[in-house]
Structure formats: C-alpha cells, structure tokens
Length: 165
Image (cartoon, rainbow, N blue to C red):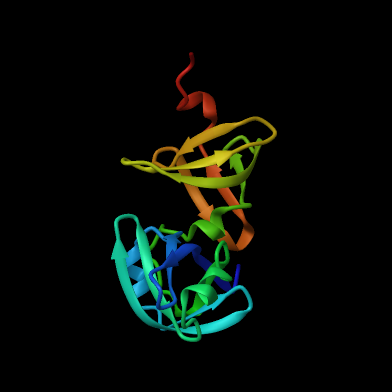
C-alpha cells in the first residue's frame, strides 16, 4: 500500500499573491480544509489558506509568495501522508489500493488487473483494460470479496451478470 496519496494537481496560478489553482483528485474537495501540510513534488509545504472556486480548490501554500513563484509549480502533484487519512468503513477502499488488484471469478478465471475505478451516479465501476476490456459494476451481488492485502478481488462469472449485445 502506498504511503502517500495524490490528492490534487496544481493546474494554474490564481491571482498575484502566490495562490495556486488545484484540480482535486479526491472524491471530496472539502478534504483540503483538514490538510495542514502537503507534499508538492518533493517539498513539504504548510497550507495557509483554502478557498473553493467552481470545480477547483485555491490554495495558499507557505513559501509561494507571488505569481511568478506559483507558475513554477504548475502541473505538479500534491500528496498527503496516508496515515493522516481517516479509517474507512467496512467494505470501502481507497482507489489507490484497488488499482493493480487481480480480479478472479468464482471459477478461478483471471480476468485481469484493475486499471482504474470509475465513479458513476449509482455505483463505482472497476475498469480492466487487459487481456480484454471489462467494466465491472461494484455491486454486492457481483463483487463478492475484496482482499487488499492479497491484491485480489472475487466476482461472479461475467456471463451471470453482463448483458449480451
């Protein structure tokens, strides 16, 4: 499991006082309010201010005093320490832990590795790219077991739940 979580990416400057505009990579941008210190590339920086603007987070980071300095941080990722993140409820997982898990069905067929987790209105979807692209709805009657320590996910056989075209 990763010791750091990527929680955002600096996409632009904001104003002339060194604030940066951040695209949040967390499911809840409000998390930035509780972060005190973040890692930007390889430098720990204290957060001095957090604002929200449409779909972006505006951060004032210690050590970035003007727009020219802020410009040098564009496209850099922001991370936080994993051990500072809250414990999750049972049967919920961080996306970073699910990526790379091997998905098997109950007949022990290896369906591939989770490439990404897509968030939809009703449920998440595990996306497998290879050996054959497969989208697996994360529903209790399809996903039977997730064992992060073993990087293993068990699902019902695809033919039992996938619509045929």
